[in-house]
Image (cartoon, rainbow, N blue to C red):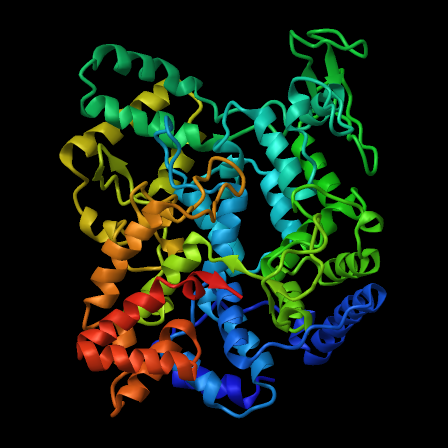
Length: 635
């Protein structure tokens, strides 16, 4: 049951807020379950304080909690309306209900998608690859929308096969983005899902960890043997077109759609389960060129034959990762979620697994692992428990952690906002709740040479299904000639009605004031997102929060000045409507930007500014507050 605060707030904003996806049932729908689970975590934290002979930190004030909860959960500051509603209502349960409101909003999915995009290196395109990855991007986004359990999501990624144009098989994009780099992809998988850093073992035994080169290749055997759909029927046609159409005109462009965007977006072979050692293999336990079978390096031992292809190696790997690695798989994702909510992992770095018994708080780490498993890897539910802890509400702590390898819980560490949090907060100030705008969606129309083609009303999935089903060159020639004729005609007769059956999708350009999760991924190099350290999506979680001069210039001369300071229609100025005094206008600006009223001293300074500069003083106040450290950091 939602309480009165949640209900009133939702109704107050219902004229602008878009509905979130219908959540699947979770144990955390029961408030009593959440309360007890949160309390158990808090007991462990309190026990650590007693052991250290330290005083448990106080709970922070409403304003700090409000801003922290919004930035952590939905990745933006609250609107002026949301902030004033929360700060002014007198309801002892309003913090719990605010958490429910945020987790049930579309903003949660948007912000969580940014996290998934960084972790899985989801990008719209890859240099040198003509086919885009929009279907894969949409698969990941849909998985977050549906709150797909983490173990299920992991299995679907690691065991993926099929065509990226099929929405149910688009997880193949996880492998396709690293086509031809099986070993690198495997190293990334181990780092993402198990917190095992094995990349050095591709070339030699890792001198800093336990992984040997033989172990890495035995693991690589599970995923070895990744192919494309049968291109044989198209091979001769493709070679002829490339040879004859040297100017790369429409014939070449049409053939390239089939070659690159149909065949090239497929993944066949389930993993051979065996692999040859490289020619430079240098250890006594194997010979260069020797065929070895797949074998897991830890957890439950899984072995495949070195004498015949298994055909389901990736499925075996996926099952092992999610079911047979003991505490490792649930520990890594539990620690990632702890870092996401609390600001710092129980152990750091979060992609280097440490057994619970070796952490500075083993009992609590075991509690988190058990909770993750008990919740069936429901990441939203897990975060809901963490958000309801007293630990999440601790006062800010400006001092460094006392535990170098992880979180010492001594108040929340100050942290600069991510690029996405900064962008999403700025567009909230400029245009109000950004979740009122339509979501980006996949475009599955057939395009040749950049132009939409109506080929018998088919979309890319239908085109892909038909092409992949052709098994003879003769049949392929007939099909290609029919396709080429449609391309040259600009579409088939009667195509207008059929065209409406295709999905045109919805996309946003670089300058659109929409959520970071809806913009091109990654952002162009001169976009504010890039300047503030958005990940390039080439390396796992390659984002940066380091300051630089370009960021200062972007705030002083770019978006802030154009869309906020000098824009009379900016949403934050609407909060001044009905305010009759300078005092009240200043108070509302502070709440809109910093989610808190000004102190008496700050009010005095700002009143002096307005008195000296008149209406321009309000613009100066906006400029100063948005460029302040307080706005750019989460406490």
